[in-house]
Length: 149
Image 1: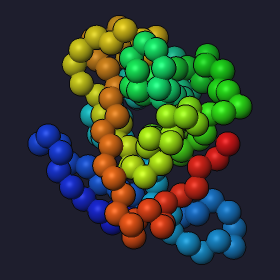
Image 2: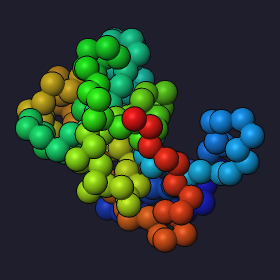
Image 3: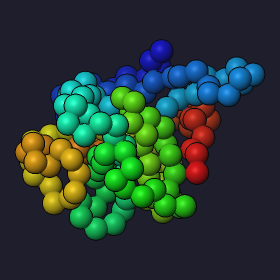
């Protein structure tokens, strides 16, 4: 179920509501992270080549705060990384210090032409994943799914 819709750079993005994971919890949560159809197609292509995938976004070196895609198990998630949710069947993690900058934002993962300097799996395709963020309204923020450590 989609609640909020907006346009950015001639691309359409939306914030999704999903059923809570725990039984007995009747609240509807707004997801912190979503993915465009274009990025889903790239994820499908990478999944065919590499199997199960995961995403991590840090605030560190390489591509700074770009989301990076790895084969599941090829990147060691640290004790300070937080799971913000899933995008197209892939867990999406973020470094806790980077999350401080994004805690009030919805992130849409998109893809664009260009070659980044990271170890992310899409780089050899001449593409790079990118994070497009939008601040949640106060009402939305009160309904956002909690992160998992």
